[in-house]
Image 1 (cartoon, helix red, strand yellow):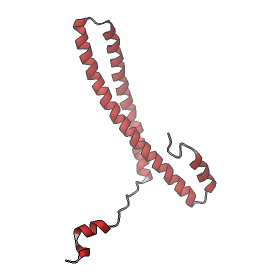
Image 2: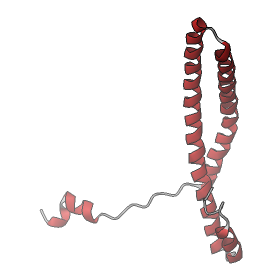
Image 3: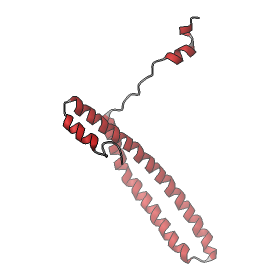
Image 4: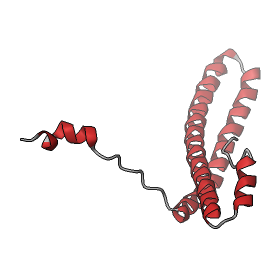
Length: 132
């Protein structure tokens, strides 16, 4: 078998496949869906936080017999809060990446359209550079 047909040779000299860029409209739809769904997530996390606050107030005045029950319930509520908050934080980060990519595409389209002043102005803005 010739060298150029060997699998390891092909792996060494294989062309890199470019990552397919996401469609802006599908990104907008995903962000819209996230923002709509986040209302429910925020309401749920606020309820957990308020319950935790109430339990913490009770803990400060609790007798030793009730203290263990209170702390156990606080741990359960905090577990739920941490879980939901971590999911929410991940979703925010993912959608932040989508927004940054959409901004880059917008500047690319503006550059191709000859709007050099707009591109220059936006590239100097820290938010447009993704520095938030």
